[in-house]
Amino acid sequence: MNENEKRQLDEQGYLVLEGFMGDALLDAVRRRVEELFAEEGERAGSEFKQEPQTRRLANLVDGGPLFERVIAIPRILECVSHVLGPELKLSSLNARSANPYSDWIQPLHCDAGAIPDEKGFWVCNTIWMLDDFTAENGATRMIPGSHRWGRLPQEVLDDPAAPHPEEVLLLGKAGTVVVMNTHMWHGAAANRSP
Image 1 (cartoon, rainbow, N blue to C red):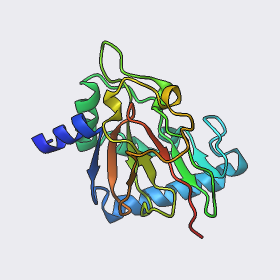
Image 2 (cartoon, rainbow, N blue to C red):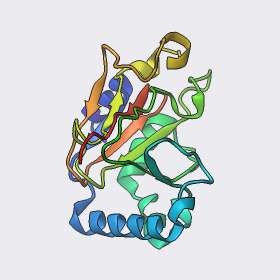
Image 3 (cartoon, rainbow, N blue to C red):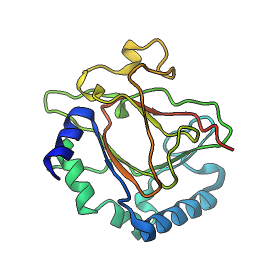
Image 4 (cartoon, rainbow, N blue to C red):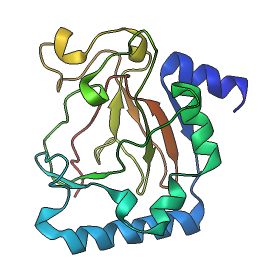
C-alpha cells in the first residue's frame, strides 16, 4: 500500500480499488454466486440474515476453491491488515444483492454492532462489485470518517434508514473491490432499477 491509500483508509474509512478483479475473476465469481443462488433457492442466506427485498448467500468460503483463493489475495490482505493489524480472522464471506424495483433501504449500521475498543478497530470488510454500483441499483451508502466517531448510528439517529447529510454513495464499475473499515456507518440504498 502506498501512503495515500493508507491515509484514505485511516481518515475516510474506505479504499476503492478500481478494476481490481479483472475480467476472468469477475466472470468466475459472478457465475459461481449465481450457481449458489440457484442451488440454495429459497433457503439462500437463511443461516445468516434475511432482509426484505434482498437476496443473500452465507458461508461462501464453503462454496468451492474459487472463494478460498479470493480470501487469500495478498493485496487485499495487506489492506485489511492495515485496518486490523497482522492477526486476521475471517468471520464471514457472504453475498448480498438488493432486488430490482425495491423501496427497502438498509439502515446505516456498523458491522457487528460494535465500536472500536481500547485495542482499536476489529471489523473490516471487502465489497466485490459483481455489477456496476449506481445511484439507482442499491449502491452502498456510507458516512466517510464515521469509523472515528465512537458512536453507533442507532444511538444518535432518529431514523438510520433516512438520508444522512454526510452520506456518500459508493459508485463503481463491476470488478472494483472496496476495502472498508466497517466501524464506518454504512448501509445499502434501495435498488429502484428495473
